[in-house]
Image (cartoon, rainbow, N blue to C red):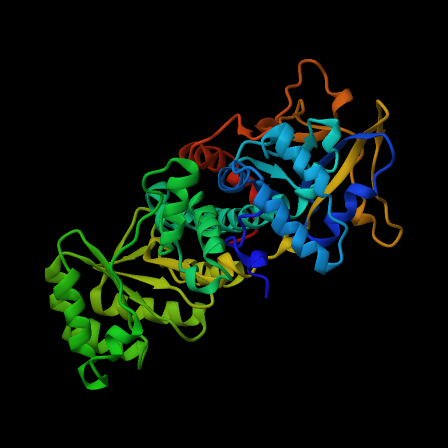
Length: 481
């Protein structure tokens, strides 16, 4: 094998971060093409709104590094055996004229914005007519950089809205309780380290609890945030089962000895053998005095069985053993202990668990959730029907609409013209053709990248503030709890 084909780290060469068929598209545009203008939207799917996130991470990681002669040579060698006609002269000219930076302008809604689906969120166009082919060449990586973290952020926000609704119904301090109700357990369940970092950070737009350390690194690197999330000491099965079944109580007691300090919180997975016996006899009798005397909060983690049935039964046992108080809203709050459910958590199972607690008189503050693959991995581009489409071209000095309208699927019809996102008189947002935007209607899309430079940045705190403002729109149903 020619080592030249594999000499650079995977992902470093922009020319090889696209789809194969993109390599030949420079030959396919109409003669006289000067500008190609495209947009990104969610065409619907699981949610009615999107929580936009992740573009700045992509821009900082990938679009601030110029294309080099070595990149061109590597791509040329690969395309020669792959079967695609390579635009060698075009790329070398881009290096000579633009220093290897992509001559494109990217505009987008501010990150953290909550926007109804079927609206433009991002636009991209080339800024130099010699490189009209640059716009669509970036589609593969740009769409990927947006759909994944935005879908995870939207899913996480939907969970937050649901949790907050139950907290408001059952808890005296819902805003004080919401930040740590949903914890990210997903680092081991995703397809890559980058997915863990970006998906984990998308979750932290809405919550403060995570075990995905890569997300904290991403927050520092891409959004200037020193510490985006927090965790607590917690047991895994091996640190319990390693003591042997006959010493299960000793394993639990060691957790109290190590982490049971006044005001502290620690979690212990307790289903290695029999979750109900562990709660009733070991935690609830043998170790009860030790837990209470420690001044800490013990978080019991069941990790098997039906989530809704198991968590309610655990809550009933712990209530019987440790006692409860009744809050101002008439719901029971466990003394000294809490529960975290980290197995099989989806929006549906989350709703069932919360409803079970509500109808049995337990406050939502008694339980939190850990979501792994269901949060970071069980999403895909069609979850929210993401697409990037060309909507306008400038050919021989004249702009023309570009669109698709397949007879077999009207849901895939694309938008026409150059686009703006504006706020209407009712406060809602809508997508308009740019020429129809009134002078007093500001375009909500902002230029964030142009010709190799990030021209507008945001902080993670600002993203969180925008998300908190709009998150309630993600679930509009007021169906009975």
